[in-house]
Length: 197
Image (cartoon, rainbow, N blue to C red):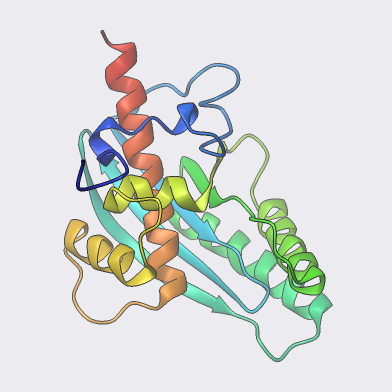
């Protein structure tokens, strides 16, 4: 019996997974490979929206920035406005070429799911027209980073710190956002390798 129930990220194909990646990779033409490409990963939330920016340099990538847009304690309309404006400023500052976002999972709490959907909508509206957006299911992100779709947040955070050579503590929201960005970097790299054969 195999020790692990899931495959390594090296064999990961986001488009082949049910609930995996969606966006330009799974529909329409694939993006043109770039020597240097910045990716912005977003983990939208109604109280905290995590963000992480990495730069791909061929097969390698490096950490550029990460953080959290904290809007807890504000009225919902003000939260959405702050998320929108903060992300517009982030995109303007870092100039990402592609954006990766975690796909919303169905929540049993209707009110929480509605607020999360609104926060995600505000984040997506902040993205300029023409900037490619890719979505990844939570299990696909964990599989790409840790090798298991059922990995814990602590395991994902540890892999992010190791892969990006980061010191110190990272908030869970920022760690998740960096994980989304790295997942997208892995997926686009695999697509490039497959298309070059």
